[in-house]
Figure 1 (cartoon, rainbow, N blue to C red):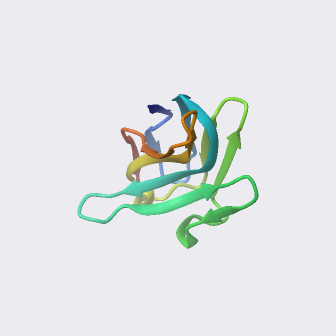
Figure 2 (figure 1 turned 90 degrees about the vertical axis):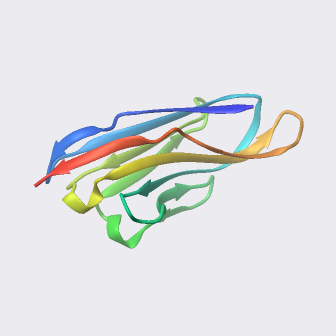
Length: 119
């Protein structure tokens, strides 16, 4: 099994910054994709940013404000969120996809972490 532990959410004023962290642990052989999704009340979960070993993708709504990065040695992914807007408020979920030590693919979600942006 693979587990994810997220941290770093909270309340921030519009224009402020937060940094989310997610660390994967367990019987991991390799990680292919690490990403962050978010879901606001009444809305569908959407991709915020994803990073592979060779590429990075951002939702158009966060380009230029959010930065995703990963530390392969720590099996960690980070999301630096700057210039936050009220519409960025949501539950943010870490997602990690890879292969475990038994050569089985995994697609694991974190428990979600709340980001609140006050106007």
